[in-house]
Length: 256
Image 1: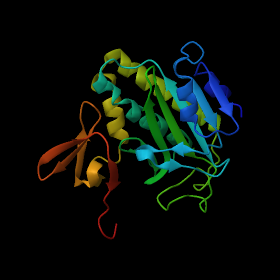
Image 2: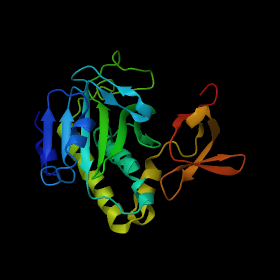
Image 3: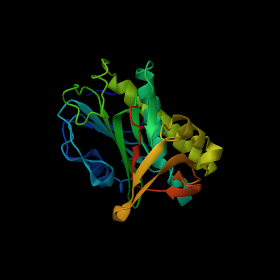
Image 4: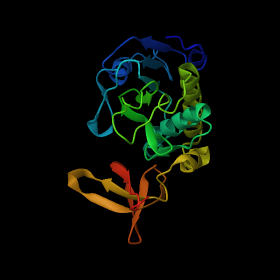
């Protein structure tokens, strides 16, 4: 696998034929700040033990998806601003996907699933270590319609597009690095422009949503906006609830 464009953006890009988890592999390198600097990237087309949010498994047939993990060392000092890192990754990947699917609606389902025409093409998982944050993305690239795991998923191949993986990764790294640098420089998602960028891409906002919360609780209301920490504000009977973690479902009216 050659990624010359990505190599022109990240200081280190490594590819492996197969691995259990690119996130787990990159976490092992987090302590090596000199050998694995900010934006170092690990890529494979065969990830056998990937994980998604809420500890869900993420497994795809070999060669049908791209697993991309990025090591982030330049981070905001304010914990509230750090809450925007997964959202920055989501909007960066949405921007990268959109460059190769210009005729389609590419959006972000809060916090960072990337959707094409309402169907999921990419999931993202951010994990913190003592030294850094590792952001992993799994993109459905060559997966056929028959191989898609659920009816709400899609892929470049299912959409009739042969993706340029190098251009996709390079665009993602460029956008992620730019959004993060602005967030670090300002310490604030609004001042950096990240709040506006995520809001513009977030298809969850304005929707009726059902949020599955810890301890089996459920919240249903309207996704009204994002607060200063990147939490989803869900309005229920005129009261806004800030959601930092939970499984969000867009509730479609009957017949839609």
